[in-house]
Length: 335
Image 1 (cartoon, rainbow, N blue to C red):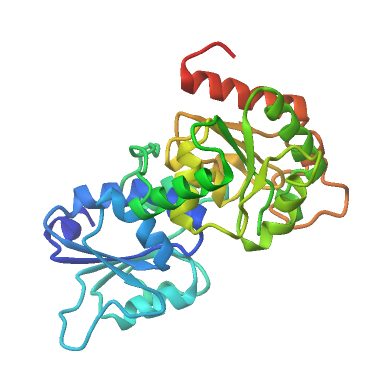
Image 2 (image 1 turned 90 degrees about the horizontal axis):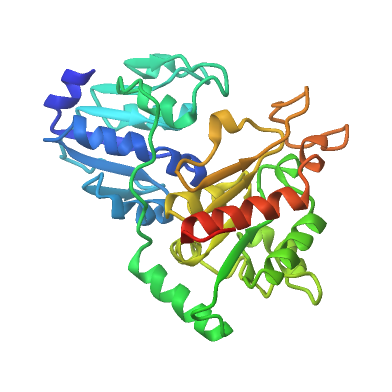
């Protein structure tokens, strides 16, 4: 495989659809850029993720889904790297005419791939390492340099903070949502207590997330709840990346926000519940994972019938302490 990449002229990378998975693919993209130094690399995926990852300069061209990366009359790709495990992603890579097709053996799609890799059990190897395995990079995954948010996102974040009166203030970003399900969501009342603790420490607390998390974030910004403002559902991905980069600390459930904060170099505290931090912890030196896994974890369930003990075992005092420690370490001052 190393020889195929070294001699390839055109390489296609089908990116994951999920924000967290795409950011955990950054070590793969950097390794691929080194391995296929002479190739023109095309990244294929959701538009906001392509915009975010462009700053790494690991690919030359970007094709936004649902578009096709191969036009009429264009030569076929020499190698296609299919990172999502879905059947449809492998099928579309085959339809693009790539002669060598790499990906995970799943969903009965192995006949569509020339190199179908069997995945280890979840948590046996970090997901970033699984991606690296596809091109023969079997070492421990290392976080690439901090991702620089797009300029448009930085301008939008600065304007939003100025409009809210938060320019030049110390910020904490809280992300209480998780699209995956309730088994990833630390109780909202604990986020509210955490927000009050961080506000007492002199931080302006922002509740952030996607449109689906707007209700939870708005509740944190209600009078007395602790957050100064809710920006959930009001920011694009590039702007949210810039808000994380500007924060003294980000506290998030196991969600894309935790990976976004870690990728831009923000001090990050990630709260894990039913899933495996060994598999999907955010990458980076400024990351602290808080997890108290019971005997039934990791179960990877979206919901739980026995009371979410994996989440309720995580106390506000522990998370607040971790957040203030990470903030102090990043600033080089005592906690």
